[in-house]
Every structure is written in C-alpha cells, then in structure tokens.
Amino acid sequence: MLISQHEYVKHSKGNLEIYCIPCEYPKVADHIQGTKEFELSKLAVTFQKTVSKGIFVLVDNHEVIVGGALFDVSLSWKMLNDILIISDSASNIARYCDLNISKSAVALNLISSLPYYPFQNIPMWEGVNKIQPFCVLKYGVKQQLEEFKIWTPLELSNDVELTLQNIRERFFEVLRNHTGSYANLSTDLSGGVDSAAIAYALKAQNADIKLYHAKTDSKWNSDSEWAAIFANDMNESLNLLPSIGASGRRYETDMPYSELTLPDSPVFWADSEGYVEKIVNLTESYGDSVHFTGLGGDELFTPMPAYAWSVVRQNRMRSLSFGFQYCLLTRTPFLKGVSNLMNSMSFKEALKTEIDIGFDYAKSRRKESVLDWFGKITIPAWIAKDYHVPCYQIAMKTLNEISGGLDSDRSRHQALESLLFQRRVLSQLNVIYGNRLTWLSPFLDSEIIESALSIPMRYHSKSGITKPMLYQATKGIVPSEVFTRGFKGDYSTFLYKGYKESVKKNIHVVRDFKVVELGIVDPDILVSELSMPTALHDRIVAFERLSAVERWLNNAMSYQS
Image (tube, rainbow, N blue to C red; front, side, top):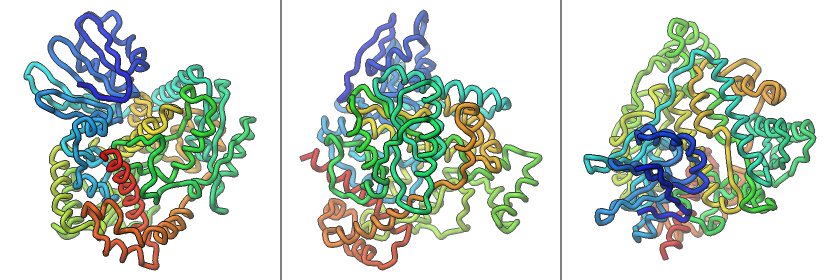
C-alpha cells in the first residue's frame, strides 16, 4: 500500500511494473527501452541516481524493490497486518495508522552535538521505519523484507582533468535542463562562490533570471558588496531582501509551518526561513517557477575538517613531509599532530566511545581533534534524567544497526554526511513550498557528487583560491574574482541578539513547552540556564535546537488533534 499526498502512476514494460511520480518516469524511460530482461538491482541503482522526487517501486515476477532518490531518505515503511505500507512521508503513515509521537526520538533530536549520521534516520513516530542512506527495500524469493545498500562512492580518480571536465559538462547540463522547463527562474546570489557560479552559468545560457540577496547585518561583512559587483557584471538587477538574521525564525517555538505542512522532522534551517518565504511570495507564476540554491557546494569543493587525515593516507610516500607542514601551519606540537594524523580508530568504535562519554558511562581518554570523525558529544543538562537511559539505548541500537561510516575515509564520510543533511534541507523546502515553487541545487546532482568525491583530497586546497576544483570546472564562464575574494562573510550577529530576545520572551513560558509537558525537559534547569548572564555559544546552539524541536512538536500535536 502506497500512501502519499502526491499522485503515483503505474508504468508497464513487459513483466516489469514501475510506480513513481509522473514527472519522474521520463527521466528513466530511456534506460529501460529495448531491454528484454531486467536485473532489478541494477535498474534500482539507475532509478536511485535519476529520480529526484518521491519514491519508486519496481515489481517483476520474482521480487519487489522500493527506493528513493540518492541522498534522500524520505522513504518510510511499516508492516500492518501483513500489508507493507510505504510512503514518501513518515507523517503520512503516522496519520493513516494513528501512531504516537516517539518521545525518545524527540529527546534524541534535542542533542545537537550528535553526528547527523546515523541518527538522522530515527523516525519521530513510533512504529515507523526509515530507510538507511543509499539503500532500498527488497522483497524477493525468500519472502522476506530486506534492506540492501546499492550505491557506494566511486574510487579515487587518476585523471583529475577528465573528472573536472565531467563536472563542468554535467553542471551546465543540469542547469540547461531546467532553463527551458520553467517560465520563471531565480537564484540566490549571496556574494559567495557557489551561488555566483550558478548565476554566471545561467547567464552564459542566456537565461532570464532573477537574483535574490539577503542583506548583511554587519559592517564587517562584505557579502552584499560582492553580490552587487557580481550582479552589475552580469548586467542584472539585484533584488535585496531583509537580512537572514532579521527575518530568520531560529528561535520560534510555536509558529505553524507554511501551508500548514508538517515535515517528517524538525526544521533546522529556520534561520533562513524568512528569506525563503520572501522569495516564494515574490514569485509571479506558482507551479511554473524554479529557484536555484548552492546547497552542497561547500561539501564537494572545500576541505572537510578531517582533510589532513585523508591527505596523509592518499599521499603515501609524501605523507611524512605533509605531516610536518600540517603541524607547522596549525601550530600543533609535532607529537600531538602525528598522533592525530595516525589515529586509525573506526567510525563505529569512535562513536560508541563518545556516546559512552557523553552519557557518563565512560571517562574521556584523549583530547578532541579536528581530525576526528566528529566533534565532542555533550548532553544538555536540561534533558530530564528519566530520558537519559532511553536516549542512550536508542542511540546504541541505531549504532549497532550500521556496519560503519559512510566511507572508510574520514573526509569523504564527513562530506557524505553533510550532503545527506543538505539533501534533507532541499527536500523539506520542496515539501513545504513545492506546490508554489520548485527548489533545486545542481551540486546535489548524483553525477556531480560522484565525480567531485572521486577527486583526491590534495586538490581541494590551493593557496589564494577558494574551491579550486569548482574554479577549474567553470573556468572561462565564472570570473576568477569569484574565487579570489578571500574572507567569507560572518552571520553570527543575530545569533546572539536573537538568543537574548528569545530568552526574554520565553523564560516565563518555558513550563508551557510541549517538551516540558511530555516530561522530556526539566524546566527548572532550563530556566536556570536561560537566566545565565553570559551567552555561551554551546548554550545558544542547544537552545536553537530545542526551539526547532519544540516547534515541530507543537505542529505535530496539532495535527494529531
């Protein structure tokens, strides 16, 4: 049984049945034309890399495969009286089956320091299952429902020039495919590299585009100045919108989501929500418009935190000299630097250790390093003690169900993990605003991702140039000044200002929060923290996360009633 607010259509090819959203089938039709016999697993890989909206179902005489778009884990499922219920939304299944909200999942979402993978996939509803990244559900001759991973990143490329050429061709192809499909095109122009590259590439194809820019809120931030320079160079007007900080909703706790839509999980990009809605409201032709964003560009073209760890392993004989350089540049004591660079603890072992330390089941054994798989895990003091054990148990259960990291290389794992989050942001944008405006990012295209991740780490950094691989891939179209402007603007001013304003607004109503009503948060400890005169960064981030979860909970409980 397939439950969705979207229309799904059946297509037949011999003994093969295909179910997907109508606009997705033409993208894959050419791959099955003229084929007499189907190997469903290989066909599923094609669908996974090609489909961008919703889920797909493949059925033949022997098996059924259900999957979703690559880097999108919206596929949800549940067994009910021997019926497999599948959906592109866990909330749809929850409403259909009248399921309760999972308090443990809510509590776990309050811990912002947990790495996104593998905890992004814990459903917010009891009894719903979520597919793991890069996997499909398979029901075959064994008459058992199994989860299979069918995609892994490509091996490192020895021909970097050819790979960059492939990125260039695919980048322009993705943009070209949409310039003729929609009546209205718009794109961000933040003043940074990714949005500028998209805007210049669209102009190179003679596209009629609107440029949107959120004004900066600090005199030390030069992004608005650069955005104006780029727009002027393209001979396009720049549509200025209120700053991200002034229009953001990062501390809202009870505001309904636009269109009264309930996303499957809390919205962690609420700081940009006002900017997004302004673009939606300024769009002239709903349903026939597309807006481009640079989501995914940082993950593909900038060094990840564990960059040096990866370079050492990829450079082999030259790794010793690189290790010396790393210690000198980062002013790290040589022995400590070598220890961090040589650390070979697996992702699973490292995560178990940090969870044990975070929940006070073990003592810290070594100092934190930027070369680790992830950062330190800290449990907010205001999470009720009664939920520490359930949180720990669900975290360990989730950890035990994975084989390891997303990749054996730490930098590639970090890139893949962050790409999963960016894809979730894009999916939520389309869930909430998709009936009015389609949101796209060329950097989340599967072919571009595969190519970029196959380039060795040493090519991710070059003195004087930001994102050297993207620079090479767009050379001749995007001016070099885009990549040599240097310092990226700071947007932290409203983080602190908004926090103080929110504390003043909420400190007297904390006891009315849903997370308090459910017993997940201790109101006395929370009020005590909010009363502190110093706005520590970790405290602000924790409260921002609490606000996002509280808002989702408010909306979800309204839907239930």
